[in-house]
Image (cartoon, rainbow, N blue to C red; front, side, top):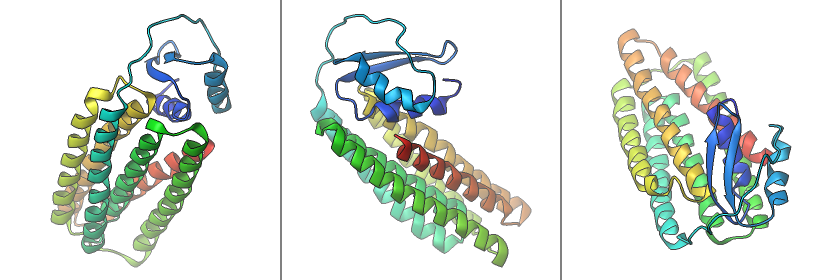
Length: 249
């Protein structure tokens, strides 16, 4: 575990495993402590395909993790609605503002909504249903991400005139929406793996919102669409890589 992205990958890999109550990562020591009700072999079976050298160091018996699925469901429904709504808002604004950064960020919001939908399924579904849902969302994300990267290439060739004011305003609203989701999920960031993964996704996505705001400033200062194209490419590739990782689970 040499970077936070590997922590995210581990959390997604363990999302289908029932009985996981929490995880504590030590990136420096490359170890993770997992609270799990069930056979250790099941956990290792999900970690070994990642190629991170997973092995059991030691095991212990602790107290069972209390069930809080009802509250989890409500929170996940709330953040799902927020992200789905912001996807529509950002996509419409991105098309109007000729901003690939906003369009790519709207895709990131859609990807988040898919993650929250998967987390909702994880609250009360079996592992097989979770894997099917994960693969479906992964393929959708992959297709959309490829479309965004292709759109960036098209605009780089034919040209575009991003509206920097609209870019920054809508990206600021998206940032506020992500921070609201962080607040909603913060109580559950030490809970089940699906909630902790959702919290990590949301906190890191705030960086994408800041990137679009900075791209808008870059367009304003330079009068060039290049900053918008760079951020659009970066966010599109980020979602593309996330889709590939989901499909590998």
